[in-house]
Length: 97
Image 1 (cartoon, rainbow, N blue to C red):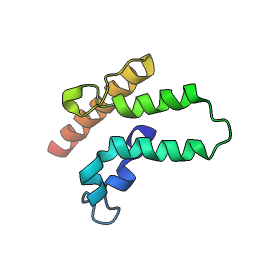
Image 2: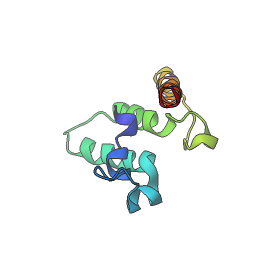
Image 3: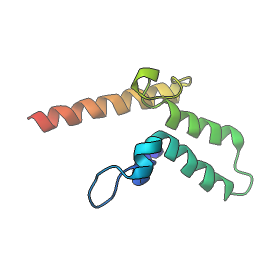
Image 4: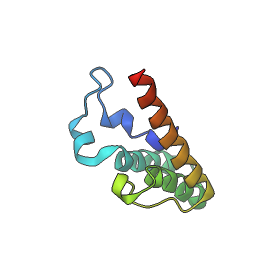
């Protein structure tokens, strides 16, 4: 769920058009900011877990050409990338049908 958390800011929840912030930063960068802010509010949030969560957000598109700042480097990140990718393909298929 957190890999696309930035979309709550990237898109207007009434029109579903991209916001100015969304156009300028994109959901990946916005998502990192949201997670950082929330983690700072949790006393002694483990840095290792925070970095793992941030890596999932940063790498979920899977390829640099597809918008990921980094490529998946953990098993969880690879699984998330493939799950997100197949979800996108199924969504496209359903819209065609």
